[in-house]
Amino acid sequence: MTDYRLRIYPQYGSRFQGAGTDFNSVLSGRWGRAYDWYLRSWLPEDKQANILDVACGNGSLLHFFRQRGYSKLTGVDISPEQVALAGQVIPDVHQANVLDFLESHCGEFDLITGLDLIEHFQKDEVLRFLDGCYHSLKTGGRLILQTPNAETPWAGYHRYNDLTHEICFQHNSISCLLRLCGFGAVEVREQGPVPYGYSLKSTIRWLMWQLIRSGLKAYNLAETGSTGSGVYTRVFITGAIKEKGSKDGQTGKE
Image 1 (cartoon, one colour):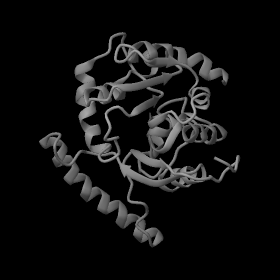
Image 2 (tube, helix red, strand yellow):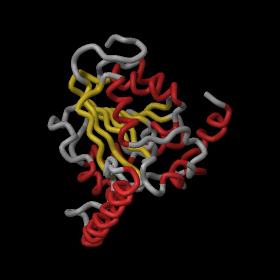
Image 3 (cartoon, rainbow, N blue to C red):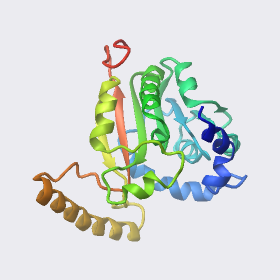
């Protein structure tokens, strides 16, 4: 691990995330309501599915899964502060390097989630991470990643909002990498206002966002002749499936 990580990650929760020492289930529940929309149709139907949340942070996504009836949940994070918080949500939380953890668990998980993680890796680590996710998933299992969007007008804000960010992705770059590492059925979604089922304010924001998106598409069309990917929110979310068979990439084999 590089020197700056050794200094930052032990206090990442308190110094960079503003986290306290007690898990806030009310705040987490409010946060999680939006993920019913963001993760629609991607979650396992089987409530006994084996789910791993990498870089689980304060445990909010683990809390989301637990509240929706999933019971086989595992979290891993390198920050002891984050592990202490997530450990208040579920018992099975590990303090470990995510890359090492994935490589030591072969074909165990039906779903792996990683919110706001992949941008913290250097380029060689990104490939190792995606290979590790492929290795740890069962065939047919899904990987879900959330990351800042290099295609948004606000890309610089999120790219440089955290010193530990090493790289930034957009629709095409992350899709190509996932396919290189053996994943298929790649789907990229915007992560903006929830159109319905959350609040009236969110619905109004969603309608405003549709107008802004149209303007961004027109900007792209005028400059390049193409509307671009259409994924313009500051953060976006990607789902992909581990398909059966050999994969391309450095190893060349599944």
